[in-house]
Length: 265
Image 1 (cartoon, rainbow, N blue to C red):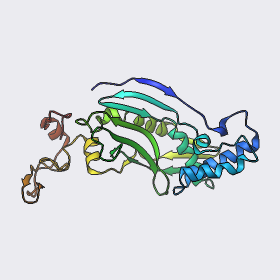
Image 2: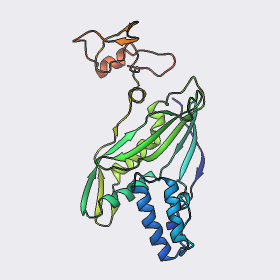
Image 3: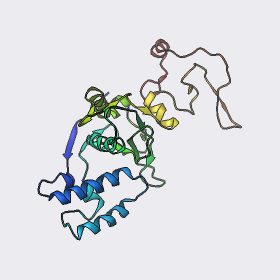
Image 4: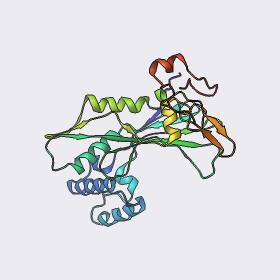
């Protein structure tokens, strides 16, 4: 399993972090930024139009969404058959959202992360490119998901996400950092209670678990039933009941090898 190396590092801070801004402009920018990050149903174009109004009075206030939020800090890297871009400052955005939604709380605030890694084509009917974003939200709040990283394939024959030990390496390091060093704001401590609940479709879950996909003959992740393909129904049918359950020992002793993938269950 090959590691990957970071090739490029970029960061553009938002206007609210600019030391040359007046206190009034910083306050307006912070209010607009908090609202833009927490309002799920407002487009970036609408936010850009809104920014033009205070810009007439305070020229330091940006006129666009990108100028208000700033370009995310990112790490670009070659990974397997594509490229991966990681956004380590998603944790700062997470802290801003937690502060916004729990601004009246004191002491310890517990929260749970929801993670999605579903793949989607970069263009409609695109045979060569597929994106696998790592989207993060926290349970119980309606919000736009935060993007922690994006993987894009470059070959039509290898469109699946990389092995999770490679694909999620930097992201899991971020999660461990949140567990070891909880986010704090004044007297409030935001304590992460899990390593993430992965809410994904069946193909993405199969890739994350390194098991046969849902259309395979040995697709059941709970038991050892080998299905039969039904030519009339045109899908694999698992017909047996009471089969031997899969265990960790069974997995390591009876790997089903696919020449195009890592060892599978």
